[in-house]
Image (tube, rainbow, N blue to C red):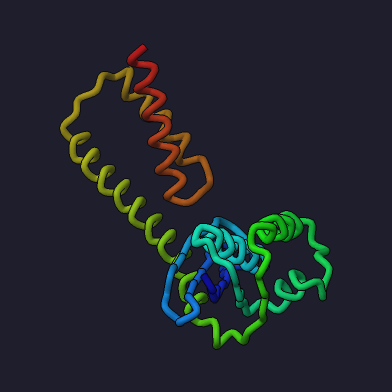
Length: 201
Protein backbone atom coordinates (compact mmCIF):
# COMPACT_ATOMS: atom_id res chain seq x y z
CA UNK A 1 0.00 0.00 0.00
CA UNK A 2 1.29 3.45 -0.91
CA UNK A 3 0.85 6.08 1.79
CA UNK A 4 1.30 9.84 2.01
CA UNK A 5 1.85 10.93 5.61
CA UNK A 6 1.60 14.54 6.76
CA UNK A 7 2.95 15.28 10.23
CA UNK A 8 3.26 18.33 12.44
CA UNK A 9 4.22 19.12 16.01
CA UNK A 10 3.06 22.04 18.12
CA UNK A 11 4.48 23.55 21.31
CA UNK A 12 2.89 26.45 23.16
CA UNK A 13 5.83 28.04 24.90
CA UNK A 14 8.75 26.14 23.32
CA UNK A 15 9.06 24.33 25.63
CA UNK A 16 5.46 24.13 26.70
CA UNK A 17 2.36 21.97 26.25
CA UNK A 18 3.00 19.90 23.13
CA UNK A 19 0.80 18.13 20.62
CA UNK A 20 1.26 16.05 17.49
CA UNK A 21 -0.85 15.75 14.38
CA UNK A 22 -0.72 13.01 11.77
CA UNK A 23 -2.74 12.75 8.56
CA UNK A 24 -2.37 9.59 6.48
CA UNK A 25 -3.72 9.26 2.95
CA UNK A 26 -3.49 6.41 0.46
CA UNK A 27 -2.30 6.71 -3.12
CA UNK A 28 -5.80 7.74 -4.22
CA UNK A 29 -5.83 10.63 -1.70
CA UNK A 30 -8.33 8.89 0.58
CA UNK A 31 -7.84 9.54 4.30
CA UNK A 32 -6.75 6.36 6.09
CA UNK A 33 -5.90 7.71 9.55
CA UNK A 34 -5.97 10.92 11.56
CA UNK A 35 -4.18 11.37 14.86
CA UNK A 36 -4.30 14.24 17.34
CA UNK A 37 -2.47 13.63 20.59
CA UNK A 38 -1.03 15.46 23.60
CA UNK A 39 2.61 14.62 24.38
CA UNK A 40 3.30 16.65 27.52
CA UNK A 41 5.86 19.43 27.72
CA UNK A 42 8.02 19.59 24.60
CA UNK A 43 9.92 21.91 22.31
CA UNK A 44 8.81 22.45 18.73
CA UNK A 45 11.51 20.14 17.39
CA UNK A 46 10.73 17.41 19.93
CA UNK A 47 7.07 17.59 18.91
CA UNK A 48 8.00 17.43 15.21
CA UNK A 49 10.06 14.30 15.78
CA UNK A 50 7.37 12.63 17.87
CA UNK A 51 4.79 13.34 15.18
CA UNK A 52 6.97 11.63 12.58
CA UNK A 53 7.50 8.64 14.88
CA UNK A 54 3.73 8.33 15.38
CA UNK A 55 3.18 8.53 11.62
CA UNK A 56 5.73 5.82 10.86
CA UNK A 57 4.28 3.53 13.53
CA UNK A 58 0.84 3.93 11.96
CA UNK A 59 2.31 3.16 8.55
CA UNK A 60 3.87 -0.01 9.91
CA UNK A 61 0.50 -1.06 11.34
CA UNK A 62 -1.05 -0.53 7.90
CA UNK A 63 1.65 -2.69 6.27
CA UNK A 64 2.67 0.07 3.93
CA UNK A 65 5.05 -0.81 1.10
CA UNK A 66 5.85 2.77 0.05
CA UNK A 67 5.78 5.96 2.13
CA UNK A 68 6.12 9.64 1.34
CA UNK A 69 6.30 11.59 4.59
CA UNK A 70 5.76 15.34 4.52
CA UNK A 71 6.67 17.84 7.24
CA UNK A 72 7.01 21.63 7.33
CA UNK A 73 10.03 21.36 9.66
CA UNK A 74 13.01 21.98 7.42
CA UNK A 75 15.44 21.22 10.25
CA UNK A 76 14.00 17.81 11.07
CA UNK A 77 13.65 16.75 7.43
CA UNK A 78 17.23 17.74 6.64
CA UNK A 79 18.43 15.84 9.68
CA UNK A 80 16.54 12.72 8.57
CA UNK A 81 17.89 12.96 5.03
CA UNK A 82 21.45 13.41 6.26
CA UNK A 83 21.92 17.02 5.16
CA UNK A 84 22.20 18.22 8.75
CA UNK A 85 23.74 16.52 11.77
CA UNK A 86 21.65 15.98 14.91
CA UNK A 87 23.54 17.97 17.51
CA UNK A 88 20.92 18.20 20.26
CA UNK A 89 21.23 15.42 22.85
CA UNK A 90 17.48 15.66 23.41
CA UNK A 91 16.71 14.99 19.75
CA UNK A 92 19.14 12.10 19.21
CA UNK A 93 16.89 9.44 20.84
CA UNK A 94 14.03 10.41 18.49
CA UNK A 95 16.35 10.33 15.48
CA UNK A 96 17.61 6.86 16.42
CA UNK A 97 14.07 5.58 16.98
CA UNK A 98 13.10 6.73 13.49
CA UNK A 99 16.14 5.00 11.97
CA UNK A 100 15.09 1.81 13.76
CA UNK A 101 11.53 2.11 12.45
CA UNK A 102 12.86 2.55 8.91
CA UNK A 103 14.33 -0.94 9.05
CA UNK A 104 10.74 -2.19 8.73
CA UNK A 105 9.87 0.58 6.25
CA UNK A 106 12.70 0.61 3.71
CA UNK A 107 10.84 2.57 1.02
CA UNK A 108 10.31 5.87 2.85
CA UNK A 109 10.91 9.29 1.36
CA UNK A 110 11.07 12.42 3.56
CA UNK A 111 9.99 15.71 2.00
CA UNK A 112 9.83 19.26 3.30
CA UNK A 113 6.70 21.24 2.40
CA UNK A 114 5.56 24.82 3.13
CA UNK A 115 3.48 25.35 6.25
CA UNK A 116 0.40 26.29 4.22
CA UNK A 117 0.43 22.84 2.60
CA UNK A 118 0.44 21.16 6.00
CA UNK A 119 -2.50 22.96 7.61
CA UNK A 120 -4.49 19.80 8.42
CA UNK A 121 -1.65 18.21 10.38
CA UNK A 122 -1.14 21.55 12.15
CA UNK A 123 -4.82 21.62 13.12
CA UNK A 124 -4.55 18.08 14.51
CA UNK A 125 -1.43 18.94 16.53
CA UNK A 126 -3.14 21.91 18.15
CA UNK A 127 -6.29 19.85 18.69
CA UNK A 128 -4.21 17.42 20.74
CA UNK A 129 -3.19 20.26 23.07
CA UNK A 130 -6.69 21.73 23.19
CA UNK A 131 -8.27 18.40 24.15
CA UNK A 132 -5.84 17.93 27.04
CA UNK A 133 -6.31 21.47 28.34
CA UNK A 134 -10.09 21.11 28.16
CA UNK A 135 -9.89 17.84 30.11
CA UNK A 136 -7.96 19.70 32.85
CA UNK A 137 -10.63 22.40 32.96
CA UNK A 138 -13.33 19.73 33.22
CA UNK A 139 -11.42 17.97 36.03
CA UNK A 140 -11.07 21.21 38.01
CA UNK A 141 -14.79 21.83 37.48
CA UNK A 142 -15.61 18.38 38.90
CA UNK A 143 -13.45 19.04 41.97
CA UNK A 144 -15.05 22.45 42.52
CA UNK A 145 -18.51 20.87 42.32
CA UNK A 146 -17.49 18.25 44.89
CA UNK A 147 -16.11 20.95 47.19
CA UNK A 148 -19.40 22.87 46.92
CA UNK A 149 -21.36 19.75 47.87
CA UNK A 150 -19.04 19.04 50.79
CA UNK A 151 -19.26 22.66 51.90
CA UNK A 152 -23.03 22.33 52.10
CA UNK A 153 -22.73 19.18 54.21
CA UNK A 154 -20.08 20.78 56.42
CA UNK A 155 -22.49 23.53 57.37
CA UNK A 156 -24.69 20.89 59.03
CA UNK A 157 -21.84 18.86 60.47
CA UNK A 158 -21.09 19.06 64.18
CA UNK A 159 -17.49 18.61 65.38
CA UNK A 160 -15.88 18.33 68.78
CA UNK A 161 -13.60 21.00 70.20
CA UNK A 162 -10.55 18.76 69.62
CA UNK A 163 -11.36 18.34 65.93
CA UNK A 164 -12.07 22.07 65.59
CA UNK A 165 -8.56 22.85 66.84
CA UNK A 166 -7.03 20.47 64.28
CA UNK A 167 -9.07 22.06 61.48
CA UNK A 168 -8.03 25.55 62.60
CA UNK A 169 -4.39 24.45 62.60
CA UNK A 170 -4.67 23.09 59.05
CA UNK A 171 -6.38 26.27 57.85
CA UNK A 172 -3.61 28.40 59.36
CA UNK A 173 -1.02 26.27 57.56
CA UNK A 174 -2.80 26.61 54.21
CA UNK A 175 -3.14 30.37 54.63
CA UNK A 176 0.59 30.67 55.33
CA UNK A 177 1.64 28.65 52.26
CA UNK A 178 2.21 30.58 49.05
CA UNK A 179 0.60 29.27 45.87
CA UNK A 180 -2.47 29.54 43.70
CA UNK A 181 -5.98 28.53 44.70
CA UNK A 182 -5.79 25.22 42.86
CA UNK A 183 -2.67 24.15 44.76
CA UNK A 184 -4.26 25.28 48.03
CA UNK A 185 -7.33 23.19 47.22
CA UNK A 186 -5.18 20.13 46.52
CA UNK A 187 -3.31 20.58 49.80
CA UNK A 188 -6.56 20.88 51.72
CA UNK A 189 -7.88 17.65 50.21
CA UNK A 190 -4.61 15.85 50.99
CA UNK A 191 -4.71 17.01 54.63
CA UNK A 192 -8.30 15.82 54.86
CA UNK A 193 -7.45 12.37 53.48
CA UNK A 194 -4.49 12.01 55.83
CA UNK A 195 -6.68 12.96 58.78
CA UNK A 196 -9.36 10.46 57.74
CA UNK A 197 -6.73 7.74 57.40
CA UNK A 198 -5.43 8.33 60.93
CA UNK A 199 -8.96 8.36 62.37
CA UNK A 200 -9.77 5.01 60.70
CA UNK A 201 -6.65 3.29 62.08
